[in-house]
Length: 256
Image (tube, rainbow, N blue to C red; front, side, top):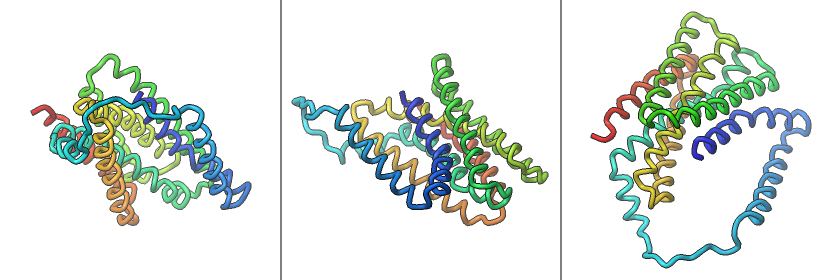
């Protein structure tokens, strides 16, 4: 279920510029905000229909959130699994955040052409989720994480070669992007699932702590990436390689 959720969420992030471009060119920039309002109304109606009107109450001891959070943060393996997820998510988030600079500013693609590129990337992310859901039935979570991190490193090496030999085109850049999409869909759900298994009785607090680690890492990485200027693509390539090796090292330390 986590693979399906992350695959769909990641695909929608990649596909959203296509919808945004169409709204802006057809109805002007205000259309996106009307779109937000319609989506919010749709979600409100959806929750009113499918969610129960009253929460089911069970008699149980009150849970101390602070005590649970302390035990969650104090578990090294939990932190390590979420750190791996954070590293690959930072790669995905950073790449999505700078693609307008790469494809529209440097390669001079139009808004629709750029949106189509991200649509292909979103499709690859979706197909990667299908691969991940198939693979996880036959191999361990540890091996799945290692395979995904290895693919992330391969994507980084390919991207570095493309930049170094000045072979940048839409097609050549899509190749490492698609490999990285497969890597992220293999690693993230496996690492998060392994982490959550350690605190299955405190899922809410554990998920909050883990997601905080992941999004803070992604935000800091993207902010640092924005300061690299003309070396943007090479920095991304090096980040892929470094984060891949860092993740593999972290995965070997789990369980010690």
